[in-house]
Length: 77
Image (tube, rainbow, N blue to C red):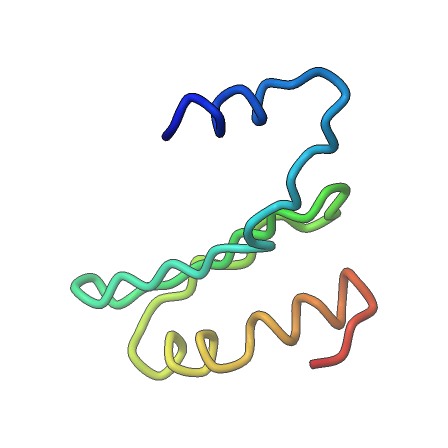
């Protein structure tokens, strides 16, 4: 990081940068399990899973983000 960027980052009164991501989907293919962690502020259900087994993990990975956003954040994707 350059000195200019470091100074800009630490400037008092500067607006915080937007959160870079809303959640994290973790899939462990070796142990065949997965989980989803939501990082949105105020989320009532921060963690979904873990789920185990090949078929369950595939279904979970395919749908969890849209299911979580619809159920807890009122978003349709």
